[in-house]
Image (cartoon, rainbow, N blue to C red; front, side, top):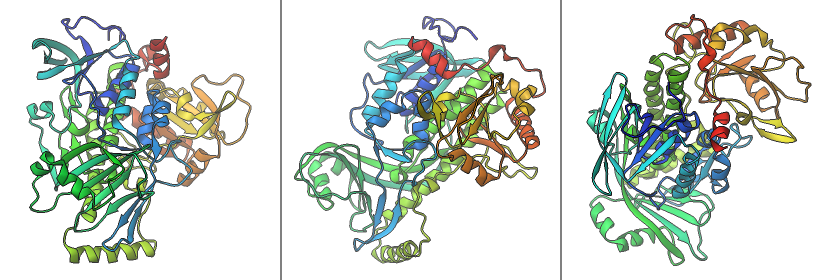
Length: 564
């Protein structure tokens, strides 16, 4: 591979390693991830500027952890606000269901769920992209044609300012174009319809004076007009209202007075200033195939979901981080092309489950039959009173179930496989920092001080994976004077990892670059088996001698190099 930081002329063959079509949150996130790793990246978008109105408004701790990886989490976190939780309110104004963020301790070292203003978030992500000289933004360009071949892709663009055609070549093309993705249409990708199709009105308002509002978000489960109230950051508030039978979406789009009349049944609008009105068709769909040779679908190009779980943007960011480490492994570490197939296998199963949960909440909220709604209120209210109703939001976000994960002989997942690895705060300099900030990108083994790290640190498979080990102490310790440079010793705060590992009765855990667990080991021998299994998943010839001359770039070192 040529110098990853070089940006050759557009007309030169293989101009870029990665071509990204679409510069929303999915495109901007993977542009940061691949730019940080040193790849030559082109990002294409037909619009010159960021859309200036809020759309997505909710994200979770896993997303912020990805933003931490690209060095933007602190800035994004400063302008966000914790999610206050959601009450589902029945026909008589009674709470029938609660849906709250997970209580402390925060397993990933960030707020479990948080609220944001999308234009501000996108601006920060694009500012992050601007750090990298190896990333080129082609704004005001429309992708009109693409062709995939064995060694790369060719795309044809139209520069909209003067209708000039532009031709690019690259090794991969990533479609982040949204729900109406032209790339997906040209690839004739089949779509699984999960049978949810409703029209909703979305109204964003700025608070400009005293107004009586709930402290938490509310799902108004009332047949007369189902609706949602969302507490955004600062003085931004959102209402989503279901359109009723016989109502015409076009009429609401043309006449704001109709929208405000509907909104007045939820809130006194006297001291509210209109930010945005939109009429959306909420869908529940998942694309069947996410890879077409060197073309990949991400974000809304691959899936759309109702907003009732606040997971649309989260799913897009998960797509980005999943695909980024796999492309990087193929290009730098000699991973098999097979690992790229696991991107769609892993993400489709995960997204389908999340879409299913979002759909189920939508059906609870949107019931229009009064008799059915009354029975719903009674049944959900009784479950809540009996303590049988799941109230923790994070419990509805599954782990991975398919793909590059450790399995038992019968094909079932090994202990912990597919779960997210925790992120403890660890001592660093004169204080504490989140552990990801002191660990390089790549495969990790996390273990306790009692486990002999020399048993695996020189294994050929582990060296070929360029794996690192972190030994996590739950108290102050003296670092080994002549320790292995591939082994990092840290002291954690509040014994988060220690307690977490004890729940699995494990001695060590093998963690993937996207922070999902490959598997938990209950002995050193089992850990060696995990390493061997991971090598088989990653390499066509897992027993071949390690070639570390092209080892993975430390992402933080790359960032420091580019910033300098």
